[in-house]
Length: 203
Ligand code: GRF
Image 1 (cartoon, helix red, strand yellow):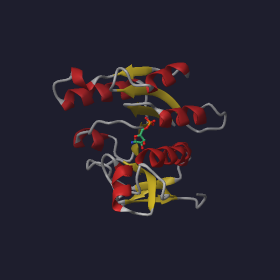
Image 2 (tube, helix red, strand yellow):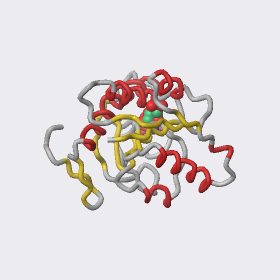
Image 3 (cartoon, rainbow, N blue to C red):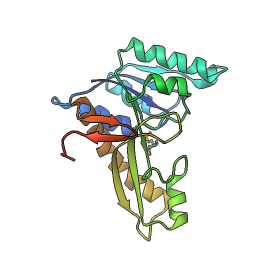
Image 4 (cartoon, rainbow, N blue to C red):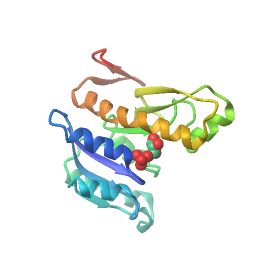
């Protein structure tokens, strides 16, 4: 399966995918990394792995549609079959999202549908909930919404800060992203209505 990974930041989830794809039996490869921020740390990770990187800086486009047209062109050019949002911090219009319906996934650092949006860990601590988590889901036009592919629940400890919780959550994200992409690549993930059905109960 040919992946296009979209990033805005440090790219540790991208790194997890790079490391997984470097293993011989992994059923997906990263054809292109697209980054909307020229100084993002993730760009180096892609270069180091010899993966084509496109910097498509949203500030150079007057309107979102033009930025998205550039994204689309780049994804097509590289033959991308599955778009992986990995810390990509731009909202995408419905037109773009619908083009990639059931072929675009996102990772979010909460147990969706709780804590959509930003500052998930600080908000969870503020509320005193006992579990944080992370979610991989197919992307729908509403932010952090869509059929859930995989989740991990992470106990919140009394000593946790937003930073410690974020760091612990990331270690789960790094395991989950390659695992979810593998399931999709192996054809085991089907969308049925607003839910995902996993074909083989092996997770
Ligand atoms: C992750 O916590 C991800 O869940 C969120 O943004 C962060 C990206 O981190 N959407 P990285 O760039 O992969 O290190």
